[in-house]
Amino acid sequence: MKKTLYIFSSGELVRKDNTLCFENEEAKKFIPVEDTGEIMIFGEVTVNKKLLEFLSQREIVLHFFSHHGYYMGSFYPREHLNSGYVTLKQAEHYLDENKRLTIAREIVLGAVKNIRQVLKYYQGRGKNVTEVLQSVEKLLETVNDCPDIPSLMAIEGNIRDYYYKAFDEIIEDPDFIFQVRSRRPPKNYLNTLISFGNSLLYTICLSEIYKTHMDPRIGYLHATNFRRFTLNLDLSEVFKPIIIDRIIFTLVGKKMVTKKDFDRDTEGIMLKEKAKKCFVEELDNKLKTTISHREIGHPVSYRRLIRLELYKIEKHLIGEKDYKAFVARW
Image 1 (cartoon, rainbow, N blue to C red):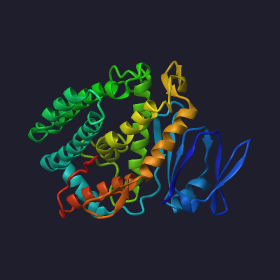
Image 2: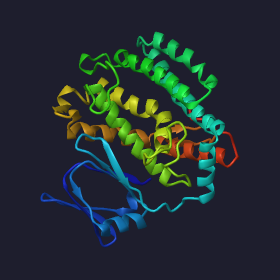
Image 3: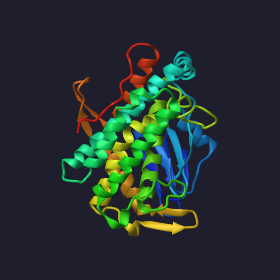
């Protein structure tokens, strides 16, 4: 399996013959291009056209994050698998309100059922989340009755509000109180972790879309507009609870990240480099973890699950099989 390269230091990323090289004043490190699937840049890194041409040939996506850990943008090489037919089908299912609603509803059902699984998991471990779980299950029953996208998004928003209330019960750490969801800037430590984790998942989903026939600019739950990419945001909804949220519960619960791992400046609260590295290490481990898959009949990694989800949406678009979102069983 190809690896994700995370660069936190400042320096220059260049092509050296047929490989990659990261160099700064302290060191020069060669990176085997055959092993590299995507690159995530958090430091002040210089790149040039020669490097971008090489990454394009090798079909490697480059993602940039700000000093605060926000996703800034990507070098998304010329799509090598893009299919005009699939793009037309994506557009057709977006422009037809009923077809769009069918896909968007299934994405929300997948997201909410995975939220329910997370709550059940912690309920089984003695956490006081029964009331939240009951509220989520009650709202889940109304998803299929939503007549349009705005009402669907409103229900999903209400469910997440309930779900976030359970975070304090699950974490039980006074330094990591949820309060309310805040984004740019995050108002507290927990929101900072959520925003950082979600940003990482958006880029991972984008990298996986690149390896399919799909166009990342056409999503269904999130409106396709002047925003660059939306399909990755849709896809992330299904996997946030079982990947990002569980990583956060582990990091805080095991004291791998504490309040000392945050800085505060005029733009709000940000994670220090050590904590970012800790987060991406846990994420890498999670994405490599395999689970048994009922339909396939053999173990698949979490990363592979994301790609399989895209294949399922593609089959739905071309009329091969109705899309059913992935739901965790544990």
